[in-house]
Length: 91
Image (cartoon, rainbow, N blue to C red; front, side, top):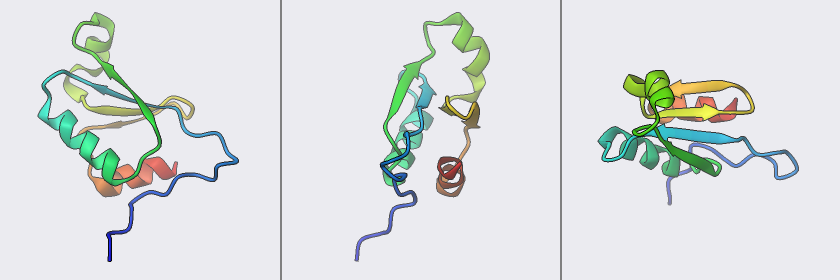
């Protein structure tokens, strides 16, 4: 039997979350966060690299990877695990 996903997509009649993953180039922690998002079957998200943006670097520098729910104005900072990610995705 296959493992059950940590997250099930929301009801298709509802607007999906607008998620953004802030990350760096060549970032093993970011790669780990991407793997957790895939395992959780997270909704589609945008990736934003902070490396060449002074404003984003100042805001997210030591915190990346950071998953942001743009609609709910919430952020999930690293370190996070599957459980914290699932709770964040549930809202």
